[in-house]
Length: 262
Image 1 (cartoon, rainbow, N blue to C red):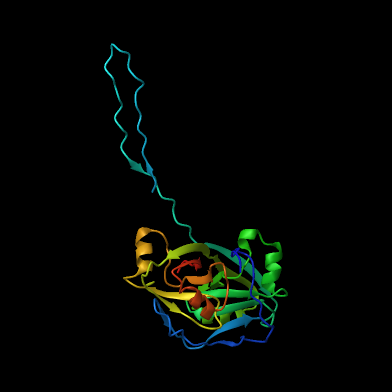
Image 2 (cartoon, helix red, strand yellow; image 1 turned 120 degrees about the vertical axis):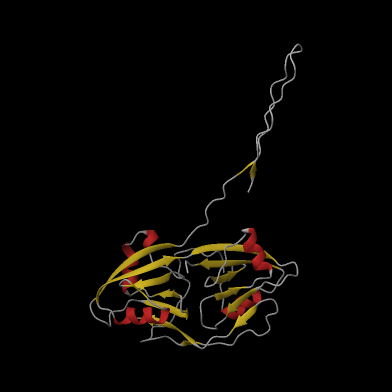
């Protein structure tokens, strides 16, 4: 539980050779206010080889022999809204002596568009990179691998490329924007479709419906939630996807979302 700090790693998994256990699980069919989709079993693969500015000015009281003068109010000028944060990309350079050299990452290919870091092994090449890299270039849990040696591929193919590459390697990665969104349903349906997999990290947002609370929040600018983002905590709790779904049922809750540039 607790606040999610980017750069921290909460996940651990046993060292195994090759892909870790399949991501399989049952869809939560009891969800009443959003839809959950069941996917074919996927794999977490371990790579071991307006506020308004309104100002009214009044003239100082005129002398008795002068007419009273009052300046007209200035026109209302809406304050410029700050630009929304965007995910930051960065490059990681590794050197693999051979295909069996441990990169030291657990990766989730549950969403083909988001090859997400689930764990970082302490004895792998990425951990070695992190030891001397600047803070904004350290690989962290929930980061996304975008390219391997310049090739942008679906998540399963990126994992294969990481496993098979040798020599000098360059990974293009992305830190997600981490957002907290307080939700007050007031009896409204959520209006989003979620993909839930028992072994995945967090819940993948598959779609935002045309009607419902999330569409209203989007239209008002209260959130930028979109497909491929991940709900990773609810009320500060990081848990299994099934538990996170259950925590989304109350009338009031706070979601922690990892937003990716997809």
